[in-house]
Image 1 (tube, rainbow, N blue to C red):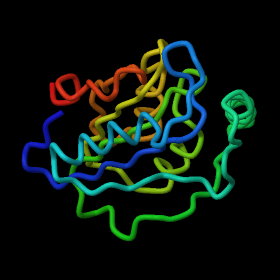
Image 2 (image 1 turned 90 degrees about the vertical axis):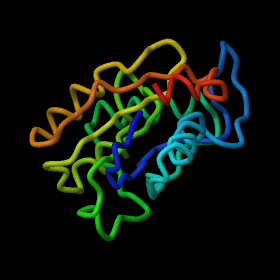
Image 3 (image 1 turned 45 degrees about the vertical axis):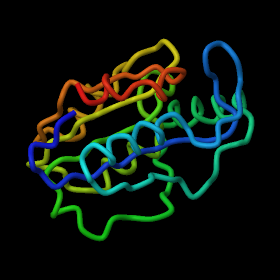
Length: 169
């Protein structure tokens, strides 16, 4: 992922704690997407913005997946804990999230819909355990028709700590 001298923002949703990695539930001190977002920041010098919903997700992995599925079915837009003051200064937005039920977590939908991303380049990246990027890029294109939405990168969660070359490519 190359910034081409553009001022960039790395906006990401990530959930630490109980996560599914390589076939097992493990307790992660930082979520997989946060690990990738931090790598992108180191490569680009961009600004990090952690997308968080006001209502925290449950500690348990299974319970979180159930809440995520309910939010998706309801097409929910969870309220976020904070907002960017000035998105206008960014040309490139790296948008990161885990693949939840084939797309982005609903707080990421809230983020994307809360800002005018027209004219910006959006570089999606997701972490997953086998489901790839799903339909998330198509969903971003639908929400942001006046943005340039790049193909996106899908990084297996269990491999994020070794993904520098994949991310930089």
